[in-house]
Image (cartoon, rainbow, N blue to C red; front, side, top):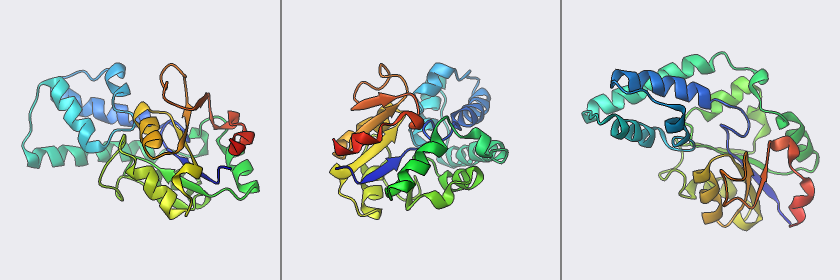
Length: 213
């Protein structure tokens, strides 16, 4: 019997990936590089530091450590300006129904996100009080695909990893869940998430009878 849910944020609960893309694209343009949507796919579930390293490599551009940190701050400021406009209309399909069903069976809920702004986003979406634990990039040393984020989340809701289900839309997140000995539900196209135990289009399509698997 599965006894705990751990959810990623971007691409599972809401779609702020476009905000990240706009902010990274703006920064990449300063390096005379056109960040494409294909490039952006490689940044899903990846930490802020590693995302910038990826862009710099693609752009064949280098920065001093001081400028690197400064550009991370600027990118985040641009992202936060876009986040300010968020409300529940930004929730992905089926999210509220999923939360209602999970709460009706007293299922512990944790967030496991690579974002450093997860709490702010949840506040804007009106979901901050829905979670029993929130683990973001501020609380871990190793980002996905390392399982630390999800293992920390399982610890905080006091559920053994093998009794948790992780909901993820990125390959690195699915890998992190499996590495942590958890069931991985992919949100999206099965061909993009071949390692996932099951794939569904959105949270609203989750079959709660899966909990007995």
